[in-house]
Structures are given as structure tokens and as C-alpha cells.
Length: 70
Length: 161
Image (cartoon, rainbow over all chains, first blue to last red; front, side):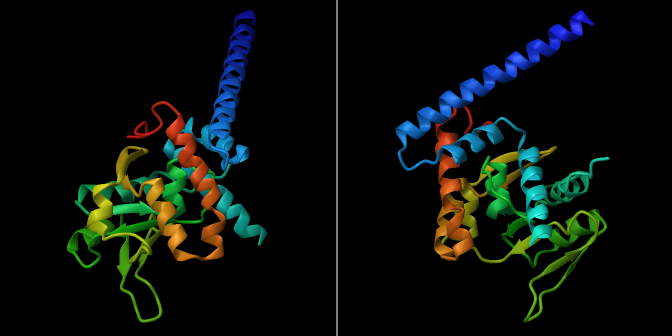
């Protein structure tokens, strides 16, 4: 149990560290590129951490959902 | 229970068959942009072929139990069969050079177990800008920002190979 909790904390810590690093990177990109939009850069950085097949599936799932809503 | 992902092993099998039969093709459009990290939404996967009339495409379709429905004056070429419905055939890309020129600068990306050639993000931007359609122009800022993110991210360019 204690081991599992430690692992969960470590995983959470990793995720937080990754998010902070991503935030720093997104800010740096937007500072260097005044035409950039933070939200776009942020989402692109998240997607770039994914496997290409997962990126495509996200896009297709959202495309289907949008089509259903229309 | 979660629905199966749209781009499943069936779709991978079709791409695998195209590669195995030596069919030259490029993944283009917003599916290509999504593969390169763009926060873009699409309903299908556009494929641009060097040669639609050659026997290799037919053999690839046959491998996965599908078939090609030839184009008519009012319809594009279509495929019928499991694993192929998600794909659209593109016969012309506005604003781009010939297939051969674009193929030479393609970005190889591994999708599942298959390495496919993908139109690079900067060329997708050129083609979207050339169409001039509002829906294509509206996605340009997201594509340009993805290009910026890829260039700023160490190893992002080429990391999907």
C-alpha cells in the first residue's frame, strides 16, 4: 500500500514537472514569436508528447463529435 | 465501455498493405497535420497517390478485402471494404508542386507499425493558404503555432520517424 502511494506521488510529481516544463517552453515560444497564440502552442506541445497514432485518433474522435453536434 | 479508436488496426493494415505493395502515397490534409502534433480536428484521412491507375493500389485493396469504385463525372474514386472507409483519395493538391516534388520532401512518420510519408506541416500550410476557403484559412494560426512548437522542441522534428 505504502509502495503504491509512493509510486502514485512520484507519477504525480513527474506529471507536474512535465507540465511546468511545458509551460516554460510555451511561454518562451510565445515571447520569441509575438504572433503565436499561447493556447495553440500549449496544445501542440501536449500533443507532441503523444504517439502519432494517438494524436490522429484524438483528432478523428473530436471530428466525429463535432459532426454529430452540427 | 469506451468505443474503439477510429484509427484502429484495420486502418493500419490498409496502410501496411499500401507500403507492402510499393504504392507511393502521401498522407495530406489535417490528418497529416494532426500526426505532426497540430491541434486540428478532422473526420477522415486524405491520401494523395502518385498513380491511381496502377495495379499496386488494387492489390493493396485486395489484401485487406476491399475494392476500388472508379470515379464518375460526379463522384471521386471511392473505396469499399473494412479499414478503408476512413480514407479519402485526393487527386490534386492546390498550391503545391508535383507529387514527385512533394514526395521527395515528405516527413516519414511511424503510425502504429507502419512508416508512412506525410506532407510536412509547412507544405500543409501552403496548400491550406492556397485554397483560400474560410475553413482552411481559419486553421492556419493553429498550424503555424504547431510549426513554431515543433521547431522549439528539441528533437520534435524527426522524433516520429
